Length: 390
Image: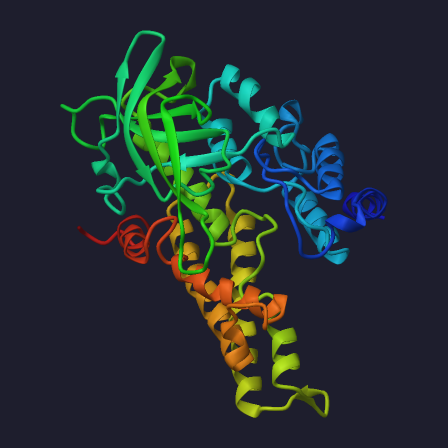
């Protein structure tokens, strides 16, 4: 038996013994936030997985990761799917700032922040976009004034995902207003529970409030939490965006649901089965075509990961983000259409799956905006992948 087969057998047995029933199937997933109370089984699952290093399977063991190879991490994900185990932990700590600190952080920064991320002891949010700096992010105006051992920050961030529950923020701030706009930006970390930080949730058409406005009024970021060089934060910030787009585009190897998850089950329930097949020929053709596209996309992402020798994301992540966002939207739209009028649930006369489909459909409208709009991704592909002139 090969080492990978041994690992699969060992991992399957460990998961069966250690993943509680209440952490399987749909339900709550830990984000690390100190402001959210976890269900008993979710908290237990987080504790056990963190002890094993399975919250960050491929991270170095010295920071609480699992130290697994890419192949081993894939096996872990497959075995978790078999028992419908939810991710023990998710959030920007694992998918964005953690990988960025592994590449750009000092040893002290890694020692201070990464173990807390892998143990699920805090939640991070992103301070990038501003009211007048969205797609043109380098136009940001939030300023950080050097006060010796710390920065004093003033400005406003918007679309701060999870800001109401976050404990820390990673942010791009302007530290030199006389330099060209890409050169005067720095990348800093700051706590959210300080007097200079005010968070206001933004309610969306889906009824949820995942985004917030964040106001920074003499907020403090310690000099020890400057990531990378002063005024050179644009490089760090771009790398973090590549990690974000890897996750959105399906390149991160995480536990993000695939586009169109549950689509066939919805079709069976609302369209019906006849002779072992979907009763409606046109629906059968549409569902099959979408499923083939989603499967091809997943296999292409897998191949891209295997061919990426450096282990760090590059400009090609924009291709996966661009197409992956469209797949997410198409899958949600198709699921809603298959439900007919039941796919527009808005009150207690609809069941939980119908209400979830409505929320998914509405929320999917943002996929072509967050993480960089379609237009931004197309520009990156044209310049950095295809090498076309400006």
